Image (tube, rainbow, N blue to C red; front, top):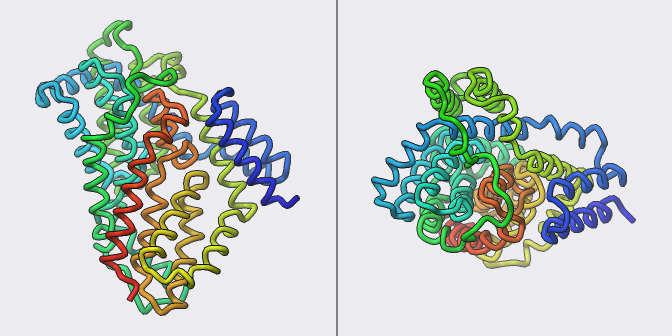
Length: 428
């Protein structure tokens, strides 16, 4: 039996265990990691290195930062102000938070970090309205993921250069991606998915958490109010972390360094005790993240992504219709990104898209952006991106509830992206 076959079997069993729910997700993730290592699907050193992944450090640090912010009266006062403006309407509350989230997503390069910033305040607003976090965390999460870097601001201003680099690397410079092309391609999706999150997302979300919630909306009412110094320190640290993440490129610091520094500052200043900081971290989610990285690494190392890409490349010429071709180039990367790192899938499929268009003498710009959009819009499984397990911990979701809530927005993304992009950026 080939390594590729073994890897696919372990991956399928892992996903089945997540859906089955008899084992804790963190336990399943670690068992999966051990299986990949024992069967030789991934090197032991590569699997162990995932425990020190900077995204994992950033994710767990943001839980501590958010927990410290949540201990202050500032977050409660902000939530009360939002609720007064919204006059108690959940739709208006969602409108305000979604708009702010979309704006932050244009300047901060991590969907997980944006979620970590917005989730405490949205949770506090819902708590005052007597609404469970399970109603709102998933809609917030899909906005953090699917609208990231859509506009040519911040990291969004570099996407065209990256795509042009792929064109040069594959010696197909008859066409070029303009600065505003990614925005022109993805803007309708941003608008429609935002409307979905505001008006429909909470309706399809579970009324009660499916599993125990943690971290960003911890029960602070049972704790004593912070002293004035700690109160001010809590929201000053949170604001400085947010500003640091927005201006990260100018500061020259890595995102994980900013998040970790904020987490340490929350403890040093006494906003959180060491025990409270440790309790704020959902360790099962950290194990889930490590297991997800290991699965993605194993699939990449054994050539699963390339195998799928080669099959796609061999059949692409017979598709004929541009919308069918666009549908395939969106759907396949979108599904693969649910279990593989999006950067790996982009690296595999953007060159395949370019070479396919080159063989037909077609314009590759739309197909390239379509692949990129699919890879940057993955939210159906906890393996897709760190923001998903963070959302699961905050909203109290299991895998079944995440997939159930994902189906309709995934269909919307696919139809809108393929229909619009293949019309605005035709092959010929």
